[in-house]
Image 1 (cartoon, helix red, strand yellow):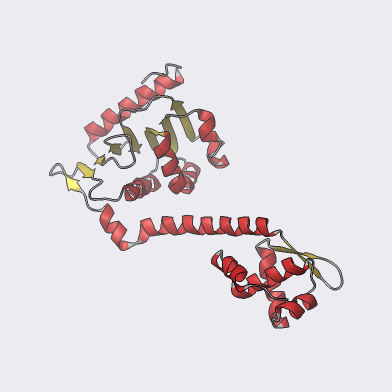
Image 2: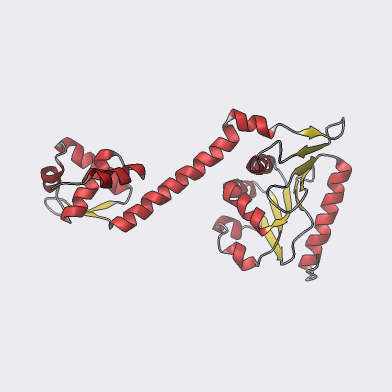
Length: 269
């Protein structure tokens, strides 16, 4: 039996080793197969076959039938590809998070700010100085430090981008007692609930209100001590950061007025 190298190549690009791909394709080709059958067609050392079959089982690509001798059944190729693609997506998500948070050049980008006042109470994270995605991670780091509360007024598009990166951090924060309040514009509650993690959906510390009208700006307030204010409603808009107590208090009051109005049923901009 001849297994075309291009088929093996596709599976190795999706994350299998060469021998894993060859054994899996051999089983697919012959149907249910014993180790002896695999050895006959794949020409792989017997001592390697059982080890690799165990690895494929652990990834859900083959299953064994308890007979004598053992018979191995392959997962259909379409389902196997879906599993491997999901693994790749998770790997990419992990690498994306790690890159933005740990690579020195991106850390340097995040630290490039323009000081507006000598006391460093106001700073602008400009789109010309900082990659917009890096701003998301800088805000995420602030959320990771939160001890009491996070208040956020944003659009559905920006909410989804932040959620994709920071949902795990949100779950950790609610577990340590941080209270989240989101006001999300441009969507219905059902649209958020469809993709929201069950831990957050069931937590009393994680609350969301929605409106159909876009806000004049987007804000996120951390522990009522520091605020990020996006000067626009797109992800590319520059962000104003401040730890000024007067400014933070003003933003907090603005948010609370919005929040109270929504909870009282007055859904107006």
